[in-house]
Length: 245
Image (cartoon, rainbow, N blue to C red; front, side):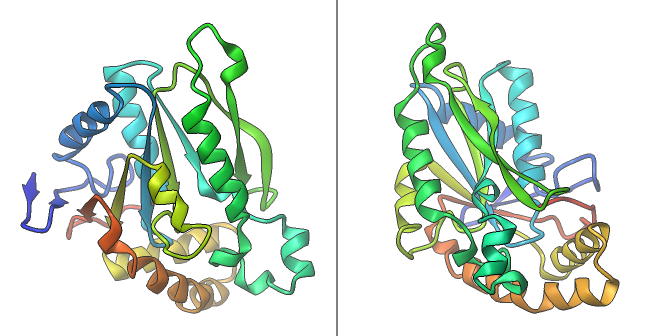
């Protein structure tokens, strides 16, 4: 693992199976995450541009934590707060889906607050908090899909806009114990994003147009927030794996 003078972690990565950002530094990241949860529930944010591999990274980190402390961690996502497709269409934003104003930001902030406050104890099932999940087949969020139980002492939250300074998004950073920014390489990130859209039945031309159009504008907005991150993790130069975002 190499740590630069800007607190940037880099390392080699094996495509698909291993995090684009992890080995050998995933060991250190796992220890850092465990340290966050040493005294009560902690919320860890994973932020990055579209195609950075946020949800994949978050799940790989959770799997590593599961080996160390079974039942400690759970992953949730800002994507569960997408506005419904019919709402987006009614607002004339179908082509802009995924931009910052196509999410229920107030709802996201409110559930983060609940997740911090309603920890209960391992015997108190009333303190379970249910998170929505974005269903890629439906292209809509589904409420009550992810259980954050009292025994989950580390909640890993991935999302694009966790470091935004816009209201009400600016409240998010204060609700997270740390936020890690995945610093993706530009071209591999765009290629992963284009392949993802093709897997969702976009034509190659439409996939590329979305990647280089509205998503590129969103990427610029997200990248402008990197200075607010607690940790910036670099993508290995040799990487080329496929990951979700």
